[in-house]
Length: 382
Image 1 (tube, rainbow, N blue to C red):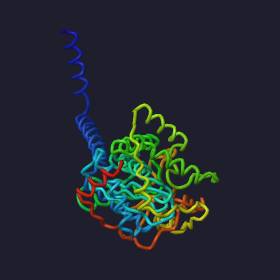
Image 2 (spheres, rainbow, N blue to C red):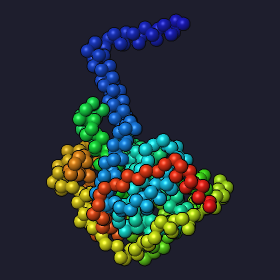
Image 3 (cartoon, rainbow, N blue to C red):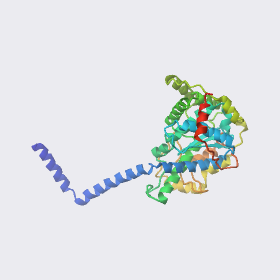
């Protein structure tokens, strides 16, 4: 006890010997650091409503780039398959929306908040409903597990300088707009982490099997994409920066065996009744590289100015990652990354990613009743 008392006394003397101003300054400095750290963390904890805003802005960009296929029958069919899977996901009550992009490029895009996009070209490449379920299950999982939002948060891809991004009003909206720019960059380039891709494959396969579809759907699509791109040296379009296709196919086979996934439905006849067109070969894809570069790059001077202002704040880009958002998406003003501009320009274009789109940008609003959905589900194995 005496020894303990001696130590406490010594600490007291040391503390009281320190000038009061220095003590207070140190305390305030530590408190400010704690507040700053909390604010940076809280800034990225977006609400469900804000996540929906991100998705709306990303979806708008995709629709402006590729146009929307104005076919209610096709859109409703995709919505029925997608909704069946979404209801089996971890976010069944999310306001899901499925959009068919009017382009021959073979691709699919998942935007935060429930927006799933699939291209006319990919629908033409696939030949049965189980394949469609495999792709939509993959994209639904990107959204339900918040892969885009979490990647932006973990990579600290949005910088507001010394401003408080968490403030109410316009400052918060600017922060959300910058997050939307980063989200579009990620979605358009298809640059998810290996873990995110593996998880989307795995959970998407489980969803497909759960509702009755053959769990081989995603692997069958990957095999078609592999064959489609057999003559190309560079990666092209859908899953362009995903893990090697052969590894993903192998993982699918292992998962089916280890988890004893035994569903068998392909609903091929129903698919062919609705999707009566084929995908164009890669060599016949008309590209719009200039349009892609414009969408990604925005005004070069504004991009350079913004980049210079934020250079000190940006995190180094990790291998296989994506660039930071350099501006906000508000109306027609678009600023994103140098990476996007160079990918669409310097590389000379990638057919399935930079394919020309259609003229109509308006999303179709199709209505699916509970009765229609139940009848559709019964027809999966019929």
